[in-house]
Length: 333
Length: 293
Image (cartoon, rainbow over all chains, first blue to last red):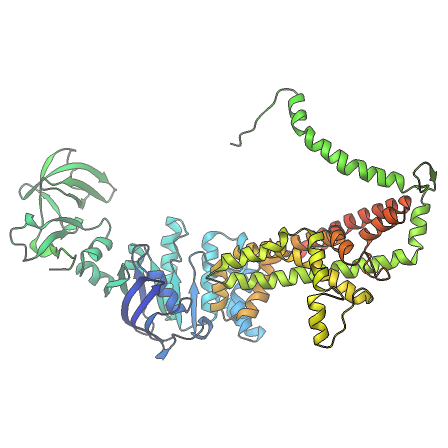
């Protein structure tokens, strides 16, 4: 268990700047999710913490000690890879015991710790199998088991669920969260899926083009996005962006107006719009409309409200407190 | 669905495979059959008559001290060639795999020796180690070592092993490098995070995952050492001194075409055929079990 601190982390590949300076203090036992679209540098950041990439500039501290120049094995971390990276020629038991064997742990203790982890992860019946004889979810668990038997101070997860099907992903997401709560190990988790970020994180780092656009608790980020990018990335369906001229009281310099789908209402008066089509999802309905000023918007409403006909002329309204204004650079106004 | 082309009748497909069948028959089955047939006779030196001797040629060979010595020579030679060429190739491949910049140049340069014909390679090595004008011989002389592979059987063996292994390193290198690059980077990284340093990673992860490649190369290299090294031996030592480098395949040539004992030569070919077949079966049966696919 340890704190992790990143101070002014930069990364350059050749002449290309990938990460432009990240600062974050991670508390002991905290679950941090690094979220962003592909190519934003989130995996590179995680790999720098792991010691698999060199740090171009800045300082990484684990448990208060600078680790920039330490080898991965000397950082007291464990990592779960996207493709699990299991050793294909070893049994599940040997996969989990590998790190302990190298550390010279006594055999009895290895067996005890591996069995303990296997019980926790419901892998006890599969210890003698090879990775190729396991399902995707089981392989994922072995990768988790390999990480937890070593009792590291920091867990690193690099998109561990993206190779699973949707149903299993939801289940494993829950298991990872429970496991992390029970073990209380500081964790860094990289994902491109904002739902995973929202559900898992104590705090999340939303990355965009090598910068941390916003760092904060999921609901805080959702309720109070600092940039247009964050507002559009976090939340599904994403926030509607409309030209700010729709609002006569838009602040100086504002160019875009953002309103979340659940804050839009179809009403008898307000901004006129035309219904394009509706998607009934059961519990809720998404109504897609176009505005005469240009732009599209999505209204998320309860399923008990009757569906508007396609092509119908409607009016949209929203509360003034639910509006977000962004300037030309995408910053909050 | 797999799409299959179907032909009506048998004549067209037969015509299409005929060239390959003819080549196999003329250059493989016919000579092999001839060897088996001739091994049962002793022809006279002028090829005018043949005398039936049954298994006499084989009996004579197995009782012949020179022939049995040639077995030992072949074993030493082929094991040495295989170990040297695979060992050096693996070492170079591991280094090239770790390279980030300029690996293409190294790869190209390392592949070049493979393009050199065995006989030419033999002559090149012969010049370097020539007892009078060889560059290496001269430097060894400066260091106080008197190199003379024409008189010293062990030195002769060393030279033909190195010359035979040299061209082979390129071939093995290519396969080892491909094998190394097929190992997922993340598996190596996972091992590094698990605490394994380079040598431990190599021993516990890389080597086992490389075993299919290693096994394939082992079979191919032994067959190479048995047969295709003829050119190298012929140009460098001619089997000498005192038959110190006469491997089985060279003895087939020297007994048959130099000594004109075609019956014995044919019998040796048959024995060689049986040995290589048995060796390959053995390798597949016992070593393949330990290979992780």
